[in-house]
Length: 127
Image (tube, rainbow, N blue to C red; front, side):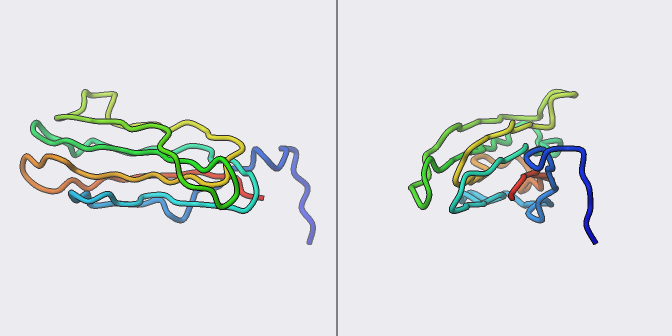
């Protein structure tokens, strides 16, 4: 059965099955990875850092590919220290258009009490 959409296909973002809870460790952990042989759109990512307390440190690294099967290049590296201020606990990674791959990795570089569990959601539009 055919379906009619009023929204252009590029704007039909869907929640990635890679979304979920991740327990941080000292090693880089892939929380989202998607590479394609054609250009596509990474819609957004949201990472909840509510569980951080004083003495915790987390790094988030976003890498992309500029060409099909090319090497990943670090685009952004973010450091978060201690408990995050109220209202600033959810980190948003904005859209990345016309990319051949996106890799989002996280690690906990300092532990105050225990390893942190972070809830993450990712949205993409792959044709």
